[in-house]
Image (tube, rainbow, N blue to C red; front, side):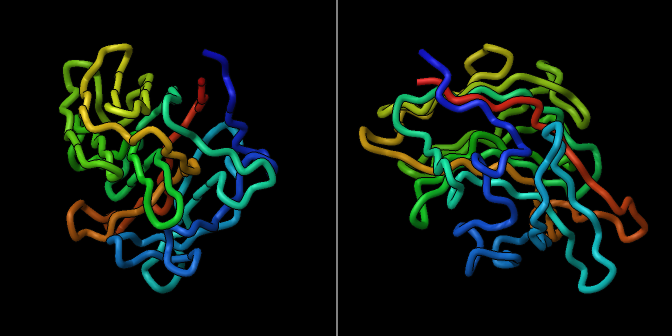
Length: 216
């Protein structure tokens, strides 16, 4: 396999900042998905994705980068392998994710995380069904932990690896002609299903995507 995408989170050719069709009317908010996000237009040097409490309205200015609408317009497709190195957030309410989206669907959640469930990574295939809430305490998954994630987007199975250990194979896959844009972001939970940030602080949340590559 050869690398066909190597993320530079400062690149205005690879990424569009603060705008996605996954958010109603392209943004800047998505309250229907239980998020306190107000999308900012900032890029993410060093792969640091952040959310900052806004002075009014109860929302947070959040980083979201997507290949949708970018000059390069990169899309992952069936058979691709995505590899990322991730440092998880610590603060309650932080909701990091790497996922895919196209034409109102084609969503695969490579991972989602919430610090109120400190050892749990969420993996989901919304294209053909399948998900796992994987408890990774034995692999060191915890707030502030750094780990390697690899996801193979097969036609008949999407396979998730943590530190090169296969932890979930959905046996459904994405089908033979699937393709979708990449999204990397930090949302803030509104308290419906996961703890929201405490009112007394902190006023900034963050996580780090140290690297993101696609091979095919």
